[in-house]
Length: 290
Image (cartoon, rainbow, N blue to C red):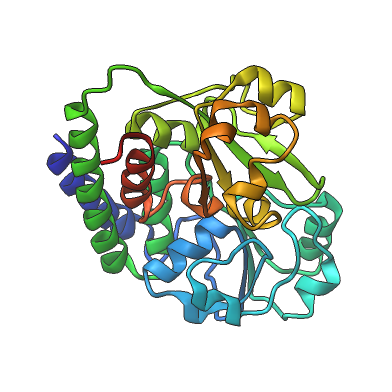
């Protein structure tokens, strides 16, 4: 089933290219001075070898490691027009998660095209993003090759999930540090992190309506997760699982008492990408010792 989907997506990539040329109808040509404010899109750009178009990134775009050589225009929700325009951009490329609005309006007002691409909340949506980027940067064949490898990995991942015999799903809490509000947040039971966790055979202890949940010691203790998966910035503030386990609330959970606390790069779970199959396998090992 997935093999058919791999071929179908690759064909879709070619059809999309034939219909719209180097990019979608509404996308102006990227030029060679693209400022990209999206960690997902930046990772995809590198995956298809289009990074020579880039002149700057946002602060949270840190993968692959090579991208750190590019200057940063700041945190994606607290940008300045001056910082972006100082790069003399040919385009501002984004997934729509940026601000303030007046900064984007000013960039657009001086004639810089602002190109927004849907980041994809599902695997299929992320695949469509890759197709669109391949067309936008005239790297359709490279995008098709990345997709084929990615989808083959997901095929194996889904097969492994179907064979997994889990008597009792471990209860997991994803903890993410929100840099702009300087506090810890829980990831709700929807979005990419949730789907990755389900494939790995875990159960999210938090619910929600698509919004991150501000965590308190009382909420953490009451949720009583068996396993905590903390994103890199928040985990690194403490430096070790032992120190992280001493946080108020966490010290009262099974995860804290058993030191079942793991660090993951936020880029592995906040969106779908070429590394998703490996991320699922990593979390499955943490939960089941696979």
